[in-house]
Every structure is written in structure tokens, then in C-alpha cells.
Image (cartoon, rainbow, N blue to C red; front, side):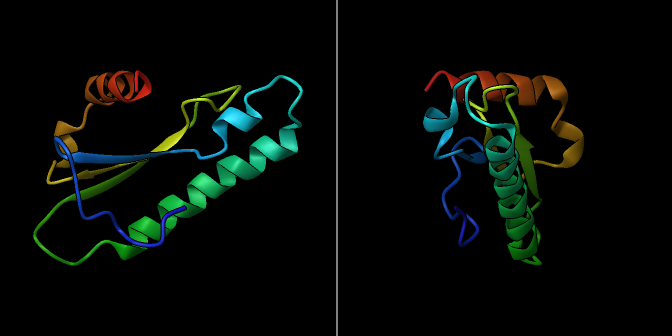
Length: 101
């Protein structure tokens, strides 16, 4: 899912939706499959964290898990935004914008 740290950020963030969310968005999908998808998101986020350059920029990696169907689950990377400015309200607003697309 994420081989390298993104280079293009729009409005201070980049996001990647779970590629198979449309396929697994069903009440019939086994919990083990959903668990594997969530683990893939977490592993990809960890990979992105490990790729963060040691420079002046602030990078924050967030995993959004939309339960129970995983429809809007995604990884969000913030760049140049200090952690104190990333409040739950900002994240909620961002998720609403991203989920509308």
C-alpha cells in the first residue's frame, strides 16, 4: 500500500483509503478478513513512520478505522503541522472532507 513517504501534500495532509474497503463492506465479511485489513493499515502506517526524514518538518501519521464496515478506513499523513495543532476537531473535519470524496 505505501512503499514510500508521499511527496505531495494538499492543505498539509495526504491520505490513502483502504483499497479493498468496497469489497469487504459487508456484514457477511468474516472478522478475520477485516482484522487483516486493519493490520495492513497499521503496518503501512508503521512503515511510513519509519520512512520519515530527519529534517525540520513535522510529520504525523494517523490511521482512521471506520468500524464495523471499514468503508472510510484510511491512513492520513500530516506534514508541517505541529502535534498541538492537530486536535480531534481538526481530524474530525478532515475525515468528513475526505469521506465525501
